[in-house]
Image 1 (cartoon, rainbow, N blue to C red):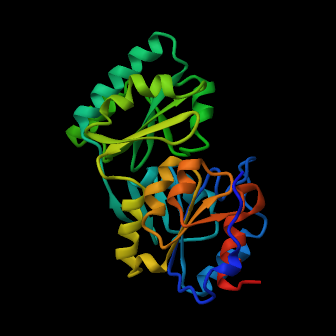
Image 2: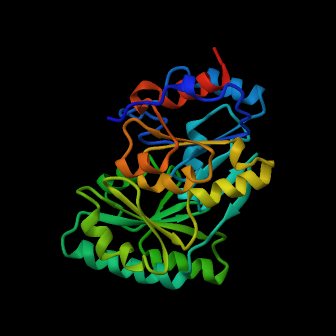
Amino acid sequence: MNTPTDLSTLPGNIDLRLVAVDMDGTLLDDGKNFPPALDALLDALDDRGIVFAPSSGRQVWTLLDMFPGRPGMTVIGENGAIVMKDGREVSSSPVDHGTIRRAVALVREAVAEGLDGGLVMCGKKSAYVERTDDRFVEGVLPYYHRTEKVEDQLGVLDRIESGELNDDIVKLAVMCFDDVLPLAERTLARFADTHQYAVSGRNWADLQIRGVDKGRAVRALQAEIGAGRDQTAAFGDFHNDISMLKEARWSFAMANAHAEVVEEAAYIAPSNNDDGVGSVLRGILGIG
């Protein structure tokens, strides 16, 4: 566990306009619970005109569902592949269909040989899974609330290409019940030279087009709301948060963060189990 930064060493007049916050291991505690005082904090940020943007590998619809009663919530979904604000799309980056088709084949082969996982095709409108047993779907649904069970993921691509289905695939994700690395290395990692590949947790790895990550999403939001790097704070704990931290002058690794994340951040926040995000924001903004 890393030692949090003494907030009294930070300036007392920080002009924030954007706060980008990872979810798992950062805003949520280890039990996947929100900190108890979050609603009051979000109200205070709204009153000050500060945009609060949950940033996650989760689907945008899942993120919006997690913040009921806050219409127009700004969210960064699919590790930066889609950004929504005020109910509209700010940016998105679809994956090329040739890569998707090859990835589907590789995952099918790996699963057939005994690896206990599967592929999630993450669309703007819905996620699509062809492994449809209850155990797998129940592992996917907490992150992808809009998930459609299909017989053939390649058939979904055919429908998109023909215009029958109005959707775009913005990310591929593999989920494995054991350590994800053996499955990821046989599948999505094979595209790392040409695409954006990231391990986003013990059980998950993601693939997007090159250059798409949480950092790019933060830049899109900064342009949208007219905020600069000096007016941005970011919080994260894992490798896929590093690009986001680099876009913020006020970058905080959580006390529970991976060592490589700590190296990239300017400061350290208390752990996710100690309401680290809220503690920092209330401290630097003088919110009681």
